[in-house]
Length: 228
Image 1 (cartoon, rainbow, N blue to C red):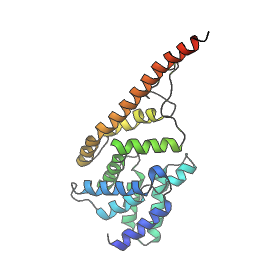
Image 2 (image 1 turned 90 degrees about the vertical axis):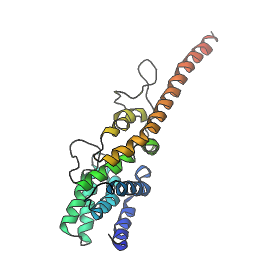
Image 3 (image 1 turned 180 degrees about the vertical axis):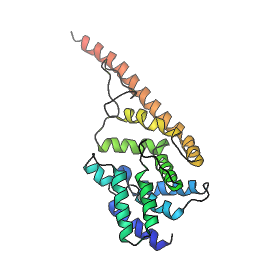
């Protein structure tokens, strides 16, 4: 891919990005991770991979405005339309669109091509480790989800089995399970290197909140009781 082609696709991507949790820097991090993984995967079509990385989240705006939409589906269609309008070959357009369609964390549409698997892994790497915790907290704030919820007895829930959204629920539902979901050996290796940072943050935050609620409720009960 030459500089002109890269700039053309990059400019279109930049016009579509306005989500602070999925901003242009997320795109560049995914691209850089994908290129690192590609160095260990012979036969990778880097032109397809670069285009797919740049365009993989261009459907985020539509999904944010209408949660019933899937940003991967919307983004795949937008990318295909844009690339066709710019005169890219049919096979290239189809390959890029398919990569984008299957990059989302779900079981119903797993990636098939090598480039799609690399994009999937690179995108998931940006939800691992410290950066994954930071991005999740940003997103949870945007949609007004709390850090945690309380059990019926008033204790802090660790998120396990929760249906109500919270940071802890998202950690247990998604972040904790990511590390066994990678398709490439290099992607899995990079994820394992980051895992300890995410686990440590979650465990420390949970311990702080559990301790605070336990001691705080006792102190409150004593303070209220002393006024009788």
